[in-house]
Image (cartoon, rainbow, N blue to C red; front, side, top):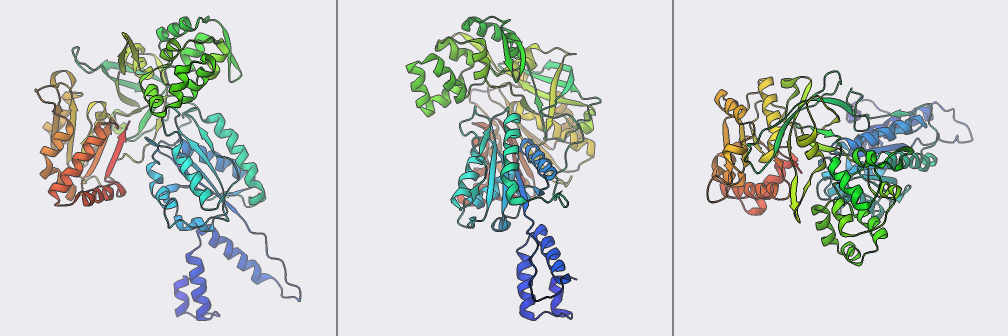
Length: 595
């Protein structure tokens, strides 16, 4: 019997009691409702005596929310939930996007594991929760005990900013932190495990021992494969082929990897994490600059190995972080380096434009082999948008990789993973890989929905996967591709494939922008504005729009062009156009995969 039916049926309750009961239940989540039901049943079975029996102890649930962009935060939260269950906790594990914010005021024990996306932005899952917790609508939380764990990358300026935001907001609302927030870098495994143990111990007195009824109320579905970031699959390289012309200013490779027997599965829009080795020449230069022997023995995570092996396979050499520069300053005691550390803007600019070899060459210091490996952070895998649909290529996965190469002071500096994949890896070699799901960059569920894809340069990768998937599934929705690169003859990536898709009618519109093929530069944002009327009509017809590629310039220029199109074609103010775009984002009709 439903509560709303109580008015129409015989009931021992008065109308006022019925209304109070309905009001109470409306504020309770399913776990709280179940507890109240059990409590009332137990209370009804008690025999009335002159002495009132004590009420049963309240069962406190540990709510664990994860805010994840690529699945790392979800993995850490799931591991914590499993440990808590084993300790007798009743656990509610949930994606923060599906959590009802009105339930916050009823929570007693809450954990949030949050990653940070882009330049300090919350993951897409956490946008609404983040907005709510910082708004005037957020309730007082003086009865809440909480803990926050952050996942991030210290090479970015706003390291673990989302976790910091949540921690500060909860404290401001009166909640009590039971465990100090920990901000984990890309090598988060050990730090996360330590924090999980601390959290279990801290929440134990509040949760109590519920071993007999311990459960995990909500568990996310996890991939069936045993391979992951901490246990990557060793995939064989089938193909690594340059797909730009010999005279191109860009070196871009198409890479195919064999996943046969791995059990790894992916969807169009997902990414692939790739482990790599540092350039042997770079390692040799570093050893020479620091006057260290390649065969020196060092210890990493209780394992002994030679210094050269550690620098090649285990440690980050091509990305700097503030922590690494601070550690080097303690050895160098250089006034110029100290000034750099004191200037936030200058420090961030230096980190983005320099590698470790440049730091040690410019600021001399004496360092032992062990000191060196202790100040460097572990080598982190790189993430690449998958350029294939599994329905099309079966047990393979394809990537589109651009070599990162820059000239400074007469020297060439290349990216760690990109140089490995385009310059050193050979067909038949193996490398560690794992799938990074991205549910925020997915084709529409309705195959009849029109799709607009904007992907200059290697941003074309996921759209190759999109089109392969739509072709394999027989989707009828219209497809429009915007692609740009410097020159038509040198840089039209996957040209033959796109031409075939156009000929077959799978791609209805294709808008190309080759910036150097005419005196004035033409980019994808210019093509967007040129096609303003038709593009706006596609949006009005329900089209989903996707952007992939450079976040610093391209993504911003494209979004500005879209705002101009919406303003002009929709006869809207700039504010109304922004609201229109925001609604597209909220409805998952505007998705970005930018880097």
